[in-house]
Structure formats: structure tokens, C-alpha cells
Length: 242
Image 1 (spheres, one colour):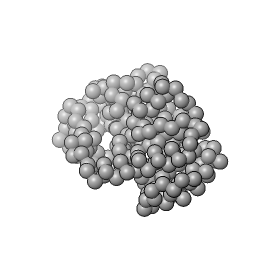
Image 2 (cartoon, rainbow, N blue to C red):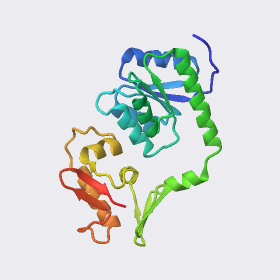
Image 3 (cartoon, rainbow, N blue to C red):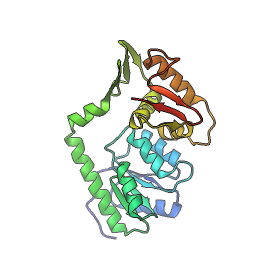
Image 4 (tube, rainbow, N blue to C red):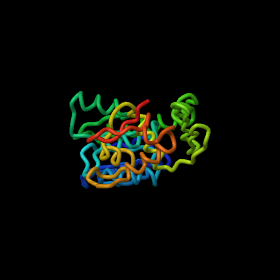
């Protein structure tokens, strides 16, 4: 194996359920000087991303429970800059385009050449370091604040200004608001919301989503019983209409 440029303790999260592939990637990434953490399910990957704060995610598409695309969507609700390298057995142009639309930084088909994989990892980590050194204040501002009607959400401050009143928002509320805003005008099922906003399996039966929407209506709607923004869609779920 060729020795590519070593770096200082960059963290790489590998979300891959095939044990032999995951361990092979771990070994070769560690030989290049990276710290590596393995997650073998989508749910474990989301948890590791939140707790471990990696510099790069290597993400398989076909995962048990929550698939790789759903993991990617969930991450992009909070972080648009974290580099994500997709590994997939699917190699069609349609699959690649779909990944790029959703915010993938690079796409490598299985089986792949190890040296090419390591070069792509190195390139993505270098690019991420440059972006951290030179942040775009306009992009930061646009993603930190959202205004609709008489309401303003300040994501950076975990705060909402609702018709002149200040409301502190929880992390779960902020993630759900980002999901609604990213999909404004499109009805989301309760299963999609559970999966994309919080990383829960669609199979979980819970009224958690309903309770959060009731809370949002109290915050943001002039008349919570006749909502203008957070509307129900019979037999579907909810839609943010703005």
C-alpha cells in the first residue's frame, strides 16, 4: 500500500455494516494517521456524529434500519459543510446525481481501489480545513436565521421571536424546524419526521411528532386552532406552509 501524506489526528467516522470492509477501512485509515470510529447502523452513525464530532464521514448507502441517504439528510439539517464520502454498490448516473443533490461531497462505487479511496479522503479533509479557515459570513448568516410572518428563528442562539415574545428552543425543536423549513410546502409523514429529524426508525409508533407540532402552533400561530404555517395533512402528516 502506498504511503500518502499523513495528517495530524483528523477524525474519520465510517458508517458501514459489512464488518470486513469497515475493519479494512479502519486499519488503512489509521495507518495514514487518522483517528477512526466505526458505526454499523444508520442510528449508530447519527449518534456517533453528534457525540464524536468527526472531520469526515465515510457513509455506506445500504444500512440496516435508517439507510445512508436518510443519515445524510439528517446531518445536512445541521451541518452543510461536514464532508461526506458515499460508498455504494450502486453506480448509476441517477444514484450519483441524487447523492450530489442531497449534499454528498464525493461518491465512490464498490468495489474501489484503496489508494483512490485514501486520496479522496485526504482531498476532502484538506478542503474542509480551508473552509474552516475562511468561513463565508453570508452563508453562516442565512443558515442561522429564518423569518416567516411575525416570527423569527435564531438557530445560533436557540431562540425564537414569536410576535414579539422570546422563546428558548430545544435541540430537538431546532432540528424539526430545520426539517420543516428545508421541505416547506411538502407534506412530511410522521415516519419521515422521526427518521430525518431525530434518527428514529420509521417503525416506532409515537405521538412525539404530534406533540411537537402542537407546541409549534402555540409558539408561532396567531390562532393555534386554525394554523396558517404548521398544517395537518389528513392520512399523511404535516406540512410547513410558507
